[in-house]
Image (cartoon, rainbow, N blue to C red):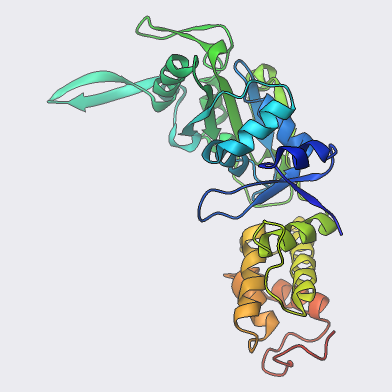
Length: 341
């Protein structure tokens, strides 16, 4: 059974190898997120001052969640930094949603109205950069560019070329920002363009040339996902969770459904449902445990394959048949599924 090491426990973290899974402790209300150690080290290095990092991969792999957990639970950040010999100053993120910018000029600022007069207002991006520069002595500051691929056009990315530099940035009002005093971290779905339903603008070559760290966040292997789901169900504290004989069976079913759904999505089907993630896998297991009288296939439809369009329903039934090994008629199926295993 695959072991998962906790980032908040320095001795555990140091024992893990580059390909071992590390669990980041979540903030209140969240679920632990587990990624390979080498990915977390790359991300943490990419958040050091002066670095420009691009993290790309499918939805649900932790591209945005990892930075948030590193900031909101300081022990995650501190353990990794100290173990890897990096500065462990408190992490401070400055999130900027890139999809809100419609032209290159808006990356710098836009005309605003106040008291009947117009004035040039600096963009949230520029204001964040200025604040990050001011806080850089006491914090590790990171400009977090959300959904880089969802900007209105490739030209909008072009508006960033003079902002994503490590040298001195000269603003239209004559102000100056030292770009090397903070890091920039951007996430995107470019690595998943052929396997999911994304509307992405082409990535500007000038932006690619400025990136210093590229991190690819792919899906975990089935055995790894089973280990992560087991860890989450047991509350991530190493203690046994629900004392249910068929818990391992439920985990296996969830993982098989996820694998089948991803295969369908790679073939252009089931794009109407949410991409599988640890959250809906966990929901499947929780609902099965809380409502054992429910047909597990119906639970899967409500959690892992919900809101499918009429066009995708045959593919949903195909996944059901593949995983459960029978026709997808919930009225005729054994509601407890005891005869299947």
